[in-house]
Image 1 (spheres, rainbow, N blue to C red):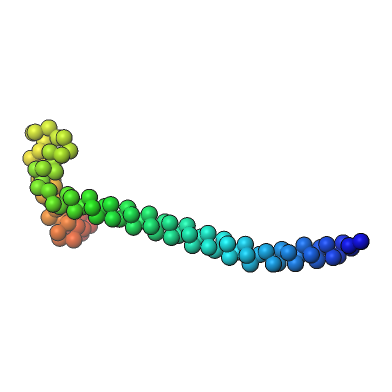
Image 2 (spheres, rainbow, N blue to C red):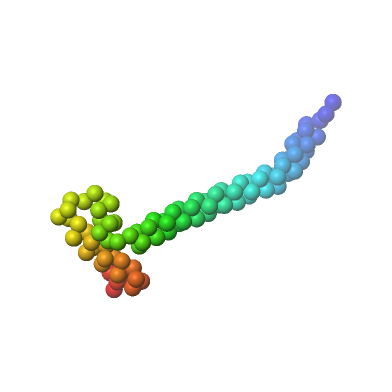
Length: 97
């Protein structure tokens, strides 16, 4: 018959042997989650750059028309787009000073 000390010792040994494997698996899981988050960030950043490039390549009037604005609202939209574009060329943080 196996005594209680042997059972407790075997369980303790199994727990000690399993702990590094668990921690290693957990570490790999955290690394994978971090990599997935980084990939998502890069994807979002690339999409933002694509939108920025499209906006900068279009004339202000075309951009304003693409939003479906009423004809009388287009001049104000163009003024704001040109103002934002000029602020972006200056570093974009003129409103913080």
